[in-house]
Image: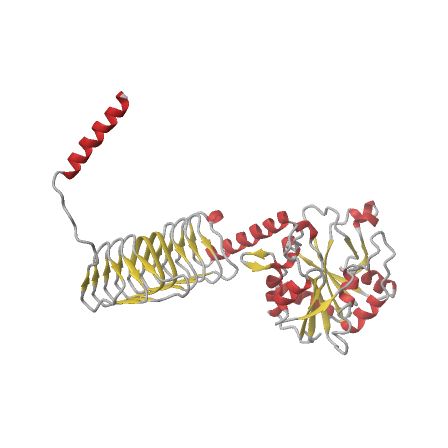
Length: 455
């Protein structure tokens, strides 16, 4: 058999998703910071399809805006069932002589290996007309059943409501994912009817049509029911998020990451943690975070769009926003926020600091309460701090401004002009002392208060 035959992926994403009660199309809701359909498309892309077609319908512009740079969008209007949806790809696939993999846009966790298994079965010597992906859930509920012979060829497909007692006892359920050769698929789809309660054209019926023709159809079974789980409600969306996070935590620990309280750590779809990273409880990783070996992310920190270097320490209670770069052995402590800023090797911002649009040199110390004033209400400006500088507590660095290497900014300064290498900049009002003034003030206030009580 040939495993190199080209294939097209047809992804069904026309449904309304009414149970989500949202103005956002259901396949665009996020799991781990990534739209549902993007998880699926990434898995499909790993197999390098010749064509990717997304069937759109309800809120179609939302889906088109998301995927049209990588897929051809075909409209299903009106929406008359899954069989009718796949049939809409007929014109787009005119002249295509490969295989067609039919996928559900709201079932994002199908693995490339499973899809390849379906294609391989389709290309096997007995040349099945249709391959169906089956699964065996703990509770079959009201899933349609795949009734098979001992060799996993299909006797028939049956919806739960139409199944007899023996058929309902079958535990092999229909995932809704199928594969067929293009020349077979559209002939079978043309023969579908909608003689059912819903008045819809059901995709599984193509199997029964092929079987009646005397053709072989075959089932492939995944041993991971959660791989084919669909998302149709907020509850199922939360369950999918929990499922994904659990898999990611396990993967991270297997790759040498220490998670002190795994169930409290939340990853993004693209989080990259090297071996020997330690993550304390209640840490959230947004998209675009990489953490190098030996770094420690302490409790209650939030990172997004940040690069954390080797042996760095972050938090507790730190926030790293997009554009943050921490070089080797840099340190960010509690209640420090960074945005579009670089903290050089060994530099420290230990607490209560905001560094935005800033470049901090190696070995520099940023005192508590320091802020870079980077925004004038219209534009952002940059602060550049040289190596080994010392910024005293409660300083305001009013950008654009440069602080030289080895310079010192005295505590409480508001710096609006550049500071040269090795210079001291102190920007404070003159300290005034009035001996005995406080004592006289307290005496006067106490007498006034006592007089008010008597009155």
